Length: 105
Image 1 (cartoon, rainbow, N blue to C red):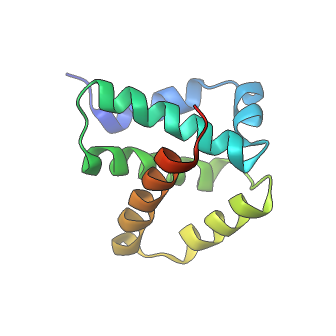
Image 2: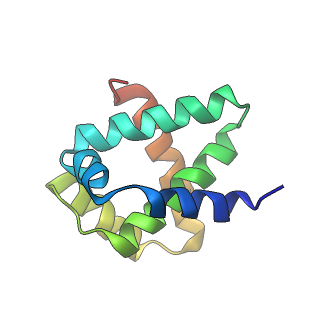
């Protein structure tokens, strides 16, 4: 079985720049994308902790590879940069909950 972290990283790398821009164009677009990914994870049986780990990987990837496109993403970016490793998982859990409650997908 493939390493889930490596698989997630590969999927993020495969995402076209155009699709990334569509997702990151607005905070709502990001929330909708995250909600879709959460829904997919829940369908295959991922629990809350596994979903948070996935959100953490996405956040790390975005933090390293993409500049914030709006004020909300800038705030998340800055919070992620100052958080230590212990603080990042709770932030990822909050992102998952926000996406579940706020996304339109």
